[in-house]
Image 1 (cartoon, rainbow, N blue to C red):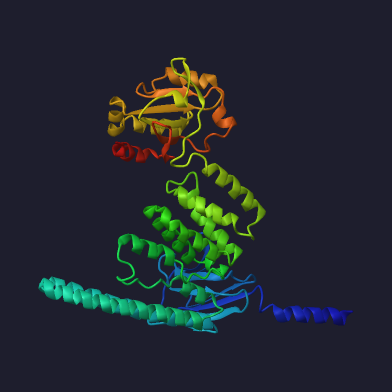
Image 2: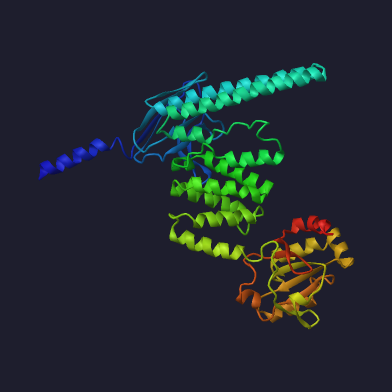
Amino acid sequence: MKRHILTIIWVLSAFLPLFGQMEITVKMPDKKADTVRIYGYQDGKQVEQYAKAYQPVLVFQDKQSLEPGIYWIMPDSTTLLDAFLISSPKNQKFTVTITDTANTYLNSKENTLYHDYMKGMEKFDQEMASLDLEFQQAQQGGMPQYMLRVLVDSLMAQASRIALAKIDFQLQEAEKAKGYLLSSVIRANTSAPNPSRETVSTEEMYQAYVVEHFFDHFPWDDPRIFNTMIAENKFKQYCSIIYQLDRPSLDTFVTATLKAAMVNDESFNKLFDRLEKVLGSIVSPYKVEHTYIKMLQTALENPKLEKARRVRYEKELERINRNLTGSIVPNFNLVMSNGDTTTLYDIQSEYLLLYLQHPTCPTCREVRGKMANFSALNQAIASGKLKVLTVYFEGDAEIWNNFIRSSEANPSYLHGWNYDLQIEENGLYDTRTIPFMFLLDKDKRVIRKDLLWNEIEDYVRSLR
């Protein structure tokens, strides 16, 4: 029996170096600091992993292995000494020597490849910088315009060749590092080549090209990339582009990207969650409704989508499909501040700003206060072109009565209470966040859904 126990212990001890152990030796003969730290990246933040008082040779050890990802060696939390990659929980034992002239790795092929790759990338940056310097010198030297134009064409051609050579280099290095996290890091940072003038002749075509090819080389098949800042930064840039362009014609490229990410469940969920947070969340000021609808539809086509997400996306799609731009909003009953009963459809106006609110909601109060000072809005009301209708849709009569008797009830607006609670009980409108504003035409057709307070003046000025 003892022999069997000893055998088990021996077998387990043989695998300990492979799993659950980390030992990184950092040699810094030329550096000085009070403390040297190792930082990692978790949930979108830089997180300290280890800290030691400075010595020329430091050994960071742990019984737990590091998660695959990118890590930074930093003295006193101020200056990056070096960045290194971890691809696997196994074999996390290596030495890095950091000097004023170079950083070298022992027993880490990946990080040796990483530093060689970074040196290669620096050469391309230097070549681009030299072209920029040549142009600046020619411009400052008073070169005639016709000669400057010739030089610019030449420099642009050289820049294009350098950019293509850079992409080739990156793809070759990614192949060389295949299997390592480094390969995915390189692919994630590899941009599509600039399109030719023959294929992309307008600004809209160029924008479509950027959106379509933004993730051309992204490693959706490697979820380790989400333990780096690269994926997060890439997603932020993408959201910014989609929001700024706000073109339904680009949504096909967004859905194509989501489908590409379906190769891995984690990749799909990470991408969708990030896009949803910016482009779809009810509290995001950067919502793009038409894109979010396509995102939800695409997600629901995913056969591997987990049940909880499917249920939530179905509910979200049902909510967001209410009262879309171009549709006629549903009617509801109102009692007005003068005691008359009426309906939304009975209120006649060329344009109507429908303002769903709670009278005591701090944000509703703040927005009402800002609206009172909007000159274009006030002029449109005074001219009779537009009416503002505030609607309280909950059941507290005291709150309603206090509001209509107070100075907060702007006398230039119409104020109504959906006293029979049709809006809430029948789910006529999405009232999860308030105030919620619609700009409607005379037929109660939606011109703008979920109008933000800082958009009101621009939309009112555009009315004819």
